[in-house]
Length: 142
Image (tube, rainbow, N blue to C red):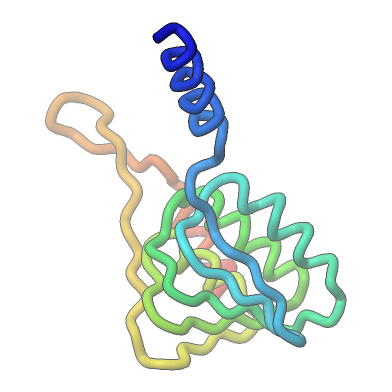
């Protein structure tokens, strides 16, 4: 019984140490295809992928969004690399920030880009902006 408990605890430790589901990154010719939820670990992975100098565009395919700050930083990385962005399928929340980072932006199948407002409670019954520079970021990158 003690071995079983020890084994279960080890498995739980390994699973707990694994990062949350993150985006997948696939390079196909001059296109970086990303899909899935956006998590903070994706920023370093994006920077690594952008080392490929053949890249000309980023295709966001089926992203439910995720961490807004990381989405904004990914958009900045895309803009700094001078890449265009395209959307195929769902692009919600933080994915929209990535999309806005593109030098030229295009939707391939007419699906809408959904953007959430970022708020956190300031006092009971009130809301205060959690990301006050969000409007500045959108104006600068559109």
